[in-house]
Each structure stands twice: as C-alpha cells, then as structure tokens.
Image 1 (cartoon, rainbow, N blue to C red):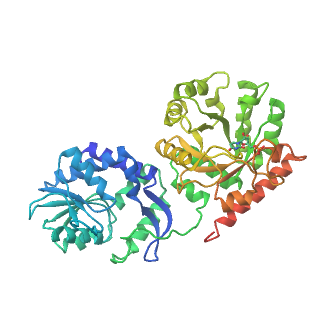
Image 2: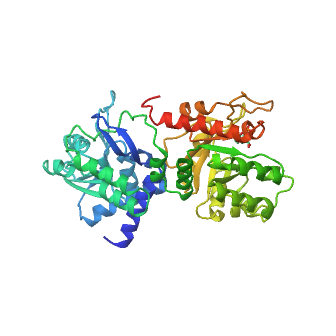
Image 3: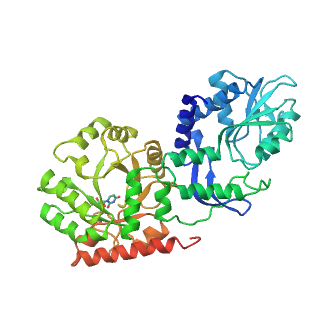
Length: 480
Ligand SMILES: O=c1ccn([C@@H]2O[C@H](COP(=O)(O)O)[C@@H](O)[C@H]2O)c(=O)[nH]1
C-alpha cells in the first residue's frame, strides 16, 4: 500500500479513537458476552472531515480492486451517509435502501433509479458475521439489482468474509480490527496489555452468527479504574494526572484561592502531599510574581507530585486569549500544567490556545457550573462537548457530573463541601460521595472546605479519604 494511503489509514484510526467511535472497556454484547472493544461508527456523521476521509478510503478501495459498478448503496443507517458522500464527491449514482416500507404511496423498499440487472456496490460500516450485509443484499436483489461486492470500513475478522463468500459476495475491507490494534499500540494509544486482551477475545470467540453483529444493547455500568483510563488516554497530561491519582491514592484537588503568596505557598506545602492537583486563581492575588509565586508553586508541585491548574477561565476571542495566556505578567505556560477555558466564544478560543500551550499541558473546558441558576443549558453543554472532541489539547471538563461516555478525558467537579450546602453568593455544594459515586465525576475540587477550616491538613485528609473511598467503592459496584 502506498505510504500516503497508509498515513491516511493511521490518521483515521487515531481520529476514530478521539471521537469515541472505538472504545475500550467492558461491553456487554447482545449475546451476553463481555467484549473489551466496541466500535460505534454512527458518530462519524457528526464529523465532516472524518466522514470525507471515510468516503475517500472506501472509494479508493473500490478503485484499486477495479470493481465495476452502475450504482452504490450504503447499508442503513450508519453507511448511508458514507455512500451519499461518495456519490456526491465522485459523481456515482446512488440508490437508497429503506428500513421500513412506507404504508402509503409506492411502498418501495429501494429508492432511486436503476436499470434491471444493474451492478450495485454495497458499503457497510462494520462487518462481524455479515448478516446485515446479507439482509440488504436480499432487498436490493428483490428490487432487481445485482450485488457482487461489498466494501466495509472495519472488518472485525469474525467470519464475515467467509459467510459472504459462501453466498457469492466478495468482501473488501478498509481496516481490520487487528490493524486498528497495531496502529494504536504503535502510537502508544493503548498498551500491550489491552491489545493482548482484545486479541485474546477475538481469537477465543467463534464466528457464531448470533454474536457481535448487532450493536450493544446494554453496557455494563462498571466504572473503569484509573489505570485502565490511563491506558486509554492519549494526552500526556491525562496519563500523568491519572498516574498521580493512583500512586498517591487521591482524587482531591485543592482550590487554593488565597490572596497573598506567603499564605498560598504555606497552604500548598502543607496540603500538597494529599492532592493530585492544585488549582490557582492568580488574578485574585495582591502580590503575584513569576519568581516569587509561579516558580515556588512549580517547586512544590515537584516536591509533592501534583499538577497545577490555573483557573483563568479564558473566554474571549482567540487572539485575545492567546495574548492573555502568553502575557509575561503571569508566564502561565512556565508553571501551570493546565488552564481552564469557557466554550462561550466558540472553538476559536481553544484553537488559539492550542498554538501556544506547550506539549504535555492542556485545556480544561468549563462545561457546567456549580452556581445557582447558571446559564449552562443542555444545548450549551453539548456544544462544549463538541469542542472538547474536536481539539486534542482539551484534557478534561469542569462539570457537575460525568457529562459524556468518553473515558480519555477527566471530569472535575467544584462545589464540594462536607459541612455546607452553599454560600450567600450562589455557590452550591455537594458531598464527595454524591459527586464521585452518583455523578460519576473523577476529581473533587475543594476550596473553602479546606483552607477556611481550623486545620487545613486534617480537612484535606478527610476530603481525600472520603473521595478516594467513594472511587474504590464505585469501581466495585456493578450497577448504580
Ligand atoms: O462551576 C464552577 C467553576 C469553578 N469554580 C471554582 O472552584 C472553586 C470552588 O471554591 P469553594 O471555596 O470550594 O466554593 C473556586 O475557585 C471557584 O472559582 C466553582 O466553584 N464552580
């Protein structure tokens, strides 16, 4: 295969992982079998660039095999847009298979225009045993079309080619599940352990036609361990934070909202051993200086092994945020690993920051706020999630609960206090258990609950223990 198309395949595999079309974990299949891998290629439709690449790869496979055809068709629903894009991009006539006949009018099962006996090339998203392809072939044949060839984006290599060949249909694939594992392994997106688990599962699974063709109906609600999440994550900062959480047995972040350097440094030095992350607001400080505050925080981060997140909440247009981030007054990139950012201005803010944020650092998007009557509606949250998916430098979300199925980013929740329900200014609090178990967040962010207490270290230990126990409890609860 030419290097150029090999590059495109690798890019596609990485994209599919990024948009959560390839998932690793524990998935209950329709057959009752637990699979360590799952492909949900339905999401591709929301990513025009990836959809375009899929269409190019399907079409170039057809060209390189010299398949002669009169029209194309996508197996509904996932492959329907694939065929549509190929049709429009390459000027190939398309026909469309209906899933259900209309109960009025023509009652046709295939829409479009063709001559009897026309050759139709079929596209499919994933083939396991080939049963969905066969179902569509039957309908097309009844409508007078010939189907001799199928091109699948991803072949799970579980008997599909053989089943289809025995019915006179040649299956060509763009990707195989083994190729996916090899590429992700070579790019350090999964570790050898995970690759072996999946290979073992695929080898040990017989190509039973009842198995694995149908999308998963129930996912076991089993929370992944930090170590499993670290193996899935691709961003260095996520891997690092999860490693710290596991090593120090803490999912507590300190919100160090103190206004002078001396107080801040004292608190962070005392509480540092108990936290995975220290969150700062340097713009509230009366005496911040790069040497006196930033560099000393960085030394403490090294001493106690935690990461630093400046809660700057960038929210302006891209150009302004870039200037704010690089301003020498704070030199954020030199001492903070993470910065928070609103999605309100659209993707331009994150896009601009991605030009200036150093490798290994990242953005945490504020998707949802803890304050009463805040304006983060469902629609807004969805839009923020979309930005998070589109940019590799977004490593997590500030949110009140785990807002998506993604396991490769971190969910961090402020508004946590053991003693209070809120403050006079709209802040609302929940307990560590509520946030970690019921809302399935990863990290609790605690400010006044620690630094305003009579004994900040004892309070930090209390928050750490409750929050980490909530995590260990939730990885052993099968359903909640
Ligand atoms: O929705 C949000 C986003 C950020 N915060 C910040 O977290 C801390 C919380 O402090 P507490 O003293 O524990 O209330 C603070 O820095 C906020 O700016 C938030 O509370 N809610």
